Amino acid sequence: MPFEEPFQHPEGIEKLLAHIAALSERTGPMRLMEVCGTHTMAIAKAGLKSLLPKTVRLLSGPGCPVCVTPSGDLDAVFALSERPHVLLASYGDLLRVPGSKRGTSLLRQRALGAKVAVVYSPMDALALAQKTPQCEVVFLGVGFETTAPGTAACILEAAEKKVPNFSVLCLLKRTEPALRALIASPDFAVDGFLCPGHVAAILGAEAFRFLPEEYGLPAVVSGFTPGDLVYSISLLVEQCAEKRPALSNTYTRVVRDAGNPAAKAMMDAVLTPCTSTWRGLGEIAGGGFAIREAYAAYDAAKKFGFSPAPAADPPGCRCSHVIRGAAAPEDCPLFGKACTPADPVGPCMVSSEGACAAAWRYRAG
Image (tube, rainbow, N blue to C red; front, top):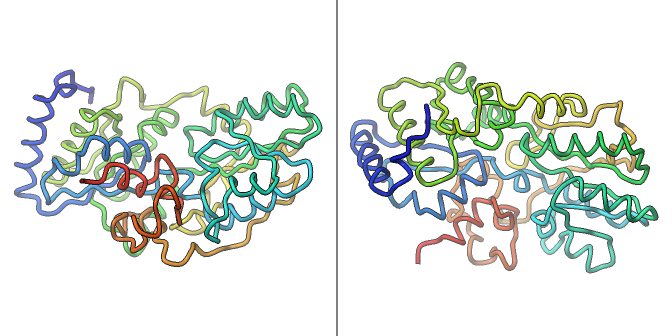
């Protein structure tokens, strides 16, 4: 279904909100979940929760890649940073994320002498490796299918140029297995999904058809403007009201049914599904990506023997519950007290896509 021009204007959004309110009078309470951190921030910034009927509740799911990276992985990353001649290259979001012990972070590691650089893309990390041959440059590959093609392209480039001192620590996650694990969790209580537009741009809208067909859950692939989101929410509410679960794509200006064939081919050439541990969801078969054996020379996990041990979240932190939609950020006893953006306890308060960061930044009053 195309994005309609009227929904880009306030009067169009007002009509949609009235439509949602009318439908909600006969549906009863609805819990709708977005599984994209950019959606989480966009919803909070626009104040959409305050505009919806009280019976329509928006929940944030496992849509922030930094947030779903478990504490044990981060502890192992900190240990890797202490190795001589290792230079870690990372997106900025990851630098402030604590591990299992409060106060630990890559920023702290850098202050203690570790070599840690902020980059804006994997290719920046590869260029850094070429400029600093005396260091083993390790790119921390965090993300979902959105960033996986760029990471794969970088590995192909490194192999073509035969850069010996570059590797990728592949912490990439796969969306579909995580959603299946979420639905199977004992505290799952969601009536419909706002599906991530960025992931769908790579995989295609059809990648989310399993939600209505296998689980009977309404699903709408959405863009990121307030108009996109209200329109998509209205379709979810309609599906719930009519008890007619389906897959809709309101982001057709970017997302095709089959996705991006070139990006998917690049991922398939370099990466393969593997078992992966998610914060809040545990170990998920097929929940992550690993680097294929053909490119093992650029796999930091094999190069340095990366084997994270299980680790608990810091005491009191409820990020694992927030990631599943089982708790709102404000339900955490640490939110806004012991845990703030200036002194975070958990990753959901650190990341620019975290639910707690969004709730704090755009909190009422």
